Length: 285
Image 1: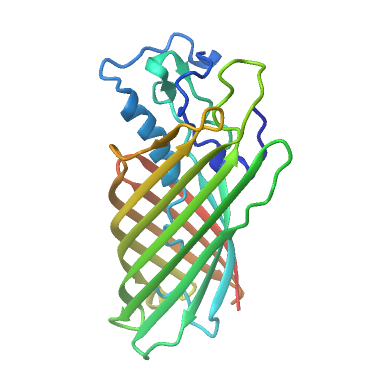
Image 2: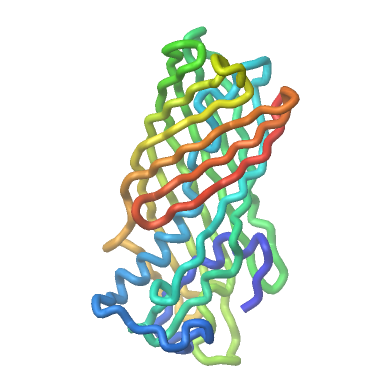
C-alpha cells in the first residue's frame, strides 16, 4: 500500500473491514500474544474509534481568544497520533496485525472569528476544511468541521462559557489490502463523524504582567460514529454495536506574540481511548 503525508491522515484508520485479507503478523510484532479476552467486533470498533477520535475538534484556543483589536485568526493545527501497540493492532482472530503507525502527526487548518456580542460576552465561530484533493495512486481525503462558543466575562480576565463542535471525515483509497496478494486493488471508503459539547474556562494572566498568556480548560462529552465500505466486495461495516461516546477533556495555553502571532499548546483526552498533544501556529488580524 502506498501512502503520502496527507493521505495518511485518514487512511491509517485501519480497517479490518475485510475478513479475507492476507493474514500476516508484522515483523516488529512477531510473537505477540492474542489477549484472552480478544473480541473481533470490539477490536475492529476500537481501531475505527481510535483514529476517528484523532479528528475531534478540541478547542485549541481560550474562549476569550481575542482580547485586543484582533477579530479573526487562521492557523495550522498539528496533532500527535500516538502509535498503537501490537496487541491493539491485531485483527482476524489475532492472525494479522494492521499497519496503523504510519505518521505521528495529523495536520489541518483552523479558522476562528469573533462575532458581535454584548460587552460582557464573547461569541466565537470556527471551522476547519481540508478539500478532497486527489492523490495519484492513493485516493482522496475530505475533512470539514465547525465550532461555536459563547463566554461570559465574570471579570475582564476570567471567562466561563460553553462550546459545541461537529466534524466529518471521508477517505477514498485502498485501505483494506486485496483479498489475494498481487491481485487488483480497489478503493475503499471510510466515514467518521463526531459531535460534542463542552463547558469552558479561561483566565488571562494580565494580573501577573503576562497579558499575552491565557490558559484554558474545557470539559464535556462527545460522540463518534464510523462506517467502512470495502471496495473489493462492497461489504459495509457500520460500527453500531461499539461506537465511542464519553468524556472529552482539554487543557492548554495560548500565547500571543507581536500582536499578530499566536501559539497554542494543548493536551486533550477522549477518555479512555485517545489522548494526545496538539500545537497550533496562527496569525491574527
